[in-house]
Amino acid sequence: MSGEGSGSQAIRKLAPGKLIIASHNEGKIREIRDLLGPYGIEPVSAAELDLPEPEETGTTFVANAELKALQAADLSGLPALADDSGLCVDALNGEPGIFSARWAGESRDFGLAMQLVNDRLDALEPDVSRDAHFVCALALAWPDGHVEWFEGRVEGSLVWPPRGQNGFGYDAMFLPDGGTETFGEIAPDAKHAISHRADAFRQLVTAVL
Image (tube, rainbow, N blue to C red):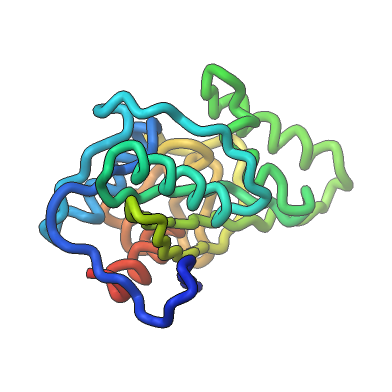
């Protein structure tokens, strides 16, 4: 789904040129660069500009993405794109959700985070559902405070032990519906075709590029 944060009806178009990627997550930055490659956009990461990471105080993926994009646009004077995404596990009432990165701790150890998810599921009844989905909210902000946002998702289930060295985050334990390989096993191009981030990007590209 998509939305727009300024109250006007028209979707604002993004002109070719520099775009701040409001992230310090190298995996996310790499995927976003790949997805933006064909559109004449010059991605520059927040880390390259030494922009600070704001505290993510929102209660939804969209709110956190908007918060990050607005700060980066304000500080850089350029349009900024932020991603907030996470894994939502049905049997865990949607957790880790917006706290997906925090479950990995300060060291961003997603091996630990995946183990924690699996341990939580194992502590429930033996035949507990392992259904899950990834959500990605993209917020595109301009220095004047205008925001467009787009939200994508992909359905799947969780496997254990994790499989594959591709991707990042929880990818190695996530098996998309209809697939036989986890996001950690499939090639990046194949993931880009079906992922939650790809779903949100398709909406963004259709609307603003």
